[in-house]
Length: 95
Image (cartoon, rainbow, N blue to C red; front, side):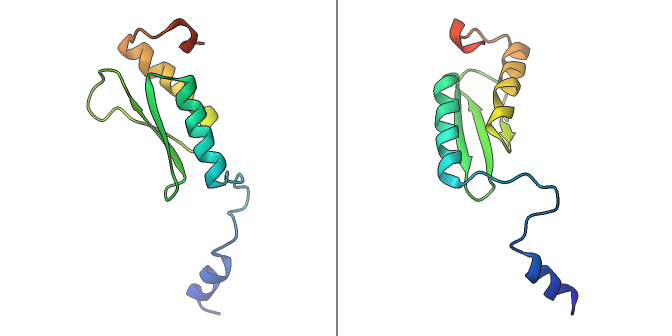
């Protein structure tokens, strides 16, 4: 069995120890929810990359983007950027 044959046979199998991926619909819903909960950000889910990508709605340096594999990783990263830029956000968004 050649190298390419074993790659094809394993192509549909997850890596050992890999976390299960969300399905696309659930991930899009998670992106929408995260955006609703964080109105200072645009949040999208890339169905090809399987990543959440977030863009600030406030003035920020060019290229300020957050990427994450899981939605729970997004808010702490948002807060870190907001603190670094000292962005003033509505009270309920900083919790």
